[in-house]
Amino acid sequence: MTLPYYTIELTENAAKIASRGKGILAADESNPTCGKRLADIGVENTEENRQAYRGMLFTTPGLGEYISGAILYEETLYQNHADGERMVDKLNAQGILPGIKVDTGLKPLAGGLGHETYCSGLDGLTARAADYYEAGARFAKWRAVLQITEDGPSDVAIQENAWGLARYARSVQEAGLVPIIEPEILMDGDHDILKTARVQEKVIKAVYRACEVNGVLLEGTLLKPSMTVQGAHAELDKESGPKEIAQLTLRTMLRSVPAAVAGITFLSGGLSEEAASVYLNEMNSLEASDFPWNVSFSYGRALQHSCLRAWGGSNVEAGQKALIARAQANSEAAKGEYVPGSQPSSDEKLFVAGYTY
Image 1 (cartoon, rainbow, N blue to C red):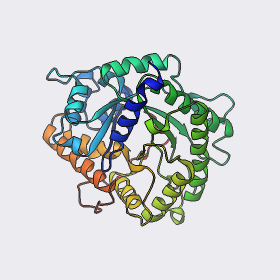
Image 2: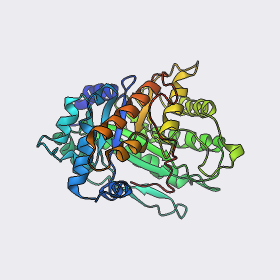
Image 3: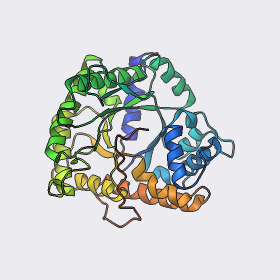
């Protein structure tokens, strides 16, 4: 099978994931990263405990009202729930499309600045994607990471990561998976929001130039960018409020994202649960919020932070109650209907320097 065979399916699945008022649950943390999360609540990092946690997430009653897709780690894609039913079937029963993280991690970038990386995993990707499709996945995710410094990101880092994202996108489309294109701009740094906007616009434009060269079907893709915010260590007088963040984020998207893209699902990138909802709501509340694409969320920590603590290793009901509250809040934010503070949330900043997963 090749891309022309899957064109209709890719377009339909991308549109389904980008449904108004719905977003993505990013539960694709690697086993070591999941272990750090479990350690925070005093739970051992075993396959049984990872199974229990993700099984709790995916069987949350009513989750499909607010979530259209869930990104899985490979272990979870092939895993059964404790009751013997496949995890992907638990998601499908709620109308949630299963997705899969397909990159194999960040590697040092030769010729770049000392800290710069590229994302690995292109070798044999189409064959792996075909196996994932057979196992029930219908979309994929690949995370490229760039960092703003005094002299970065370098041109070689931008071009290498843009090309990698485009090659990945075309490769998984050949196997029927909708690619989520994720060029993350880390929050590390003390730069102001205008510098973030300039860099982000340059990066996203480079990504779509590479997609054009590679013949990527844009209608069968989603973009997962960072919101346009100041650096995490910016001085207080450089901090921007929700309205400015929303305006600059949308300006950047309108300048750089083709109208053919099915949807934009923002990552939370270290924002607190509440800030991630408030900023998304502000974007969808602006008077000029008639965009060519649906603007929604693909959150990991901003959906799971309170949920993980409420679950605590065994309290399924409390964990699911916390998850559905954040899912509903972000669903409302994706429609411009969220009232800040109306759902239980945490204001704890979730920023981690040089975040990897």
